[in-house]
Length: 244
Image (tube, rainbow, N blue to C red; front, side):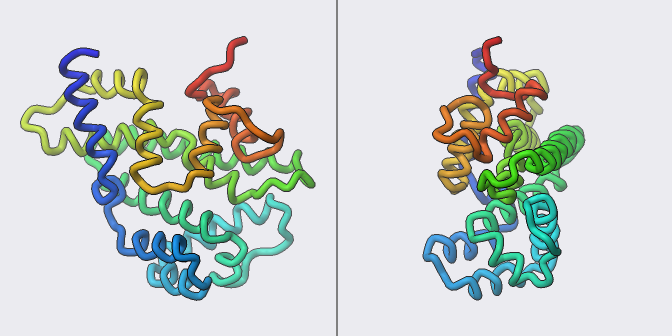
């Protein structure tokens, strides 16, 4: 690593550890996380989520996407129905991804265009992962766990790119994009796992992410991580490519 790359790596590492800088609006996420940790009554969670109509609509949409393929038979008729079905962990994962996307939309060019490309890829992976579940009916796979995991499938690239954008936005002299490419090519795994830890995402999501990227062995043949691993391998996106 060159001196310049080390300097940028250190600063990007610090930005990734700052939840407020990475996520931005935390007026919902903070109380939502506290409610989940405290195992609050679902009515408290519903009140928190419903205070943001945009998030409420997003959760209804995500829930319906998963329920359609996930072996459900009807659209959730209310926010309460959707949240009860999702469970608190999936609610938080969906909310986190929603506010992360909102934050990414605020980036300046050329970073906004780059990160939107990654986000489009993420949505494509999520759609493919849900479609693939038709082959695994009866295996006890939770479609929302598959969808939420897929939304974090290229989390490292997105987080590193956004942190680099924030760094350059405040730099007297912008760092070249070649340094960003070096970080993604050579340090993506380290920075990704740091982001999972620093941003308070649940351990199950991290573990399934590691299974999906062939960084950790699966303990069962049918899981969200194994479903996603097949898709990421086909797209040459594994952090730890399999030896053929």
